[in-house]
View 1 (cartoon, helix red, strand yellow):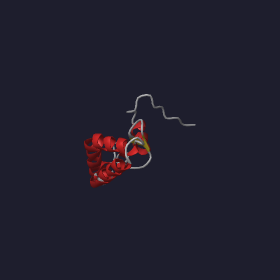
View 2 (cartoon, one colour; view 1 turned 45 degrees about the horizontal axis):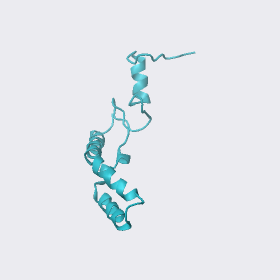
View 3 (cartoon, rainbow, N blue to C red; view 1 turned 90 degrees about the vertical axis):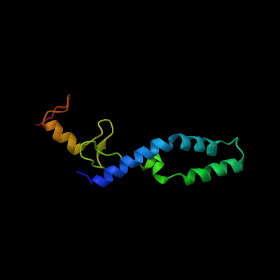
View 4 (cartoon, rainbow, N blue to C red; view 1 turned 135 degrees about the vertical axis):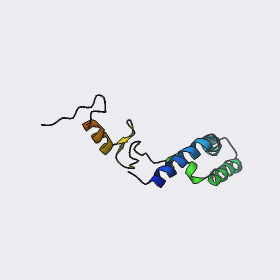
Length: 101
């Protein structure tokens, strides 16, 4: 299991991303628009920099839903390879067949 604090920090980031998504998108649209005057684009960049760093989507870490493990996580399953193997051995993953030869 991952540290509880790491998992909670990641959840806090998810909430911040959701909260600031609209504002961040609006400011990015202004900052990247070539038709806008240069000073407005610069002001948009400054306001964007004032937003919390953890409100950026890139700061979210993919973690296993079962264990909280940060690495080797399958996006489609939202599960780490280790958790998938353990649940597969117990027969709890439908359609997963363990091969042995």
